[in-house]
Image 1 (cartoon, rainbow, N blue to C red):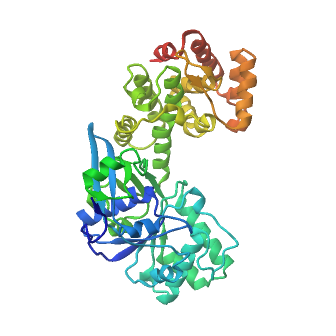
Image 2 (image 1 turned 90 degrees about the vertical axis):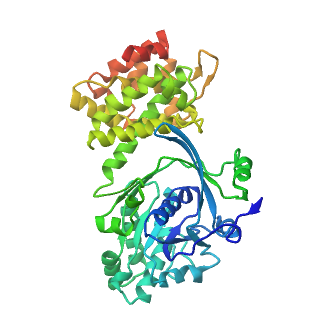
Image 3 (image 1 turned 60 degrees about the vertical axis):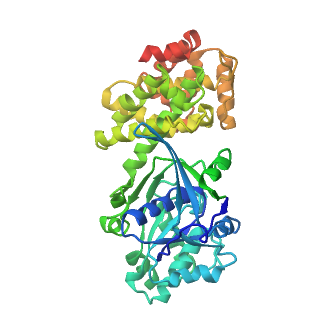
Length: 479
């Protein structure tokens, strides 16, 4: 078996046009995979310089393999199982700015640089007032980026053709807006010139994005077989699902410079990210939150098995297509395609996704993912959505704890105040008190849900049915 490096594998030299803050599994299996496809299928012809955002990271491992690695995509594509391996060759080099700060700052001096892409975790886009302009480097990611932009501004004497296009991929709604605000805070803190502020505003673009691909990461259990198949000793293989979506809130001239759509990729340039964010939360996260307790209390442990179950599968379909989809405002055909993609993802034959892993903090999840849909459905249809109501009753029942009919333990996990509330309510033995107590918990919902017409009665009826007939029969009753 060969070592993996540029001596043993082909590696094309391309102009360095992208600075990437972050070297983790997600960026390598998502952004760098997308850039690889753009290089292969369009004239994009760009390579990536990776910058390690914190002082401990993986750049040494990357450089040891000359920044070559494989992406292993697994899942269903239009019903067909796929398990592919692709060598990604787009990273030219990887830097640690904590030990190579001069090289990091020199990136700003390269005239061909055009893009900055980042994923520094949700905590990465934060303002740290202790950062200084002459730190080598600033500790925060926005601080490092501001240092780089200011150095570029000075190097090219404010030339507006040398601005950068910035795509943050952190999992924060309107991440671009937050990053831009934080850069302004550094401009003010460091007393940078008005000329620089104007150059940043007019020459650079910071665009909000939404990213979506499940990336399990390094395939520990499969790695020996993968290396045998590759005949390379690749210690940076990253496993991901086939589905990918990148929504970028940017004008069409940016799309022309970053021609991912021409490579046949699911990358959308749109005027507003908001409806796509809402679609993902509603049609992906929303069904997850209610299918989990319904499936588990019916004796089904894996998401894929729940989707394929003759009763629970119909319940999931009802919640997605008949209820939640009716609350969204994007075109129906777009929503149906996305929902069908979600079902393929849920049915991934390579991933045993335990429903209990989704059950953590179910009440706050229901509040953000399902409650808005319940209210909109009631407003539009004049009746409550039965599947979403049953999902809430299932969560309340799951939080009672105890054991399933087959002896499997029910172990809820949430904030202590929620756990204590449910324990006290269930101790009363009265489903009316349980219902009214949960719906009236304003610290969970931010309001009293007992005021939603008919909700308390519907939840109590479902709780009674689950206690008397069991979950499976209760589900059958609403289909």
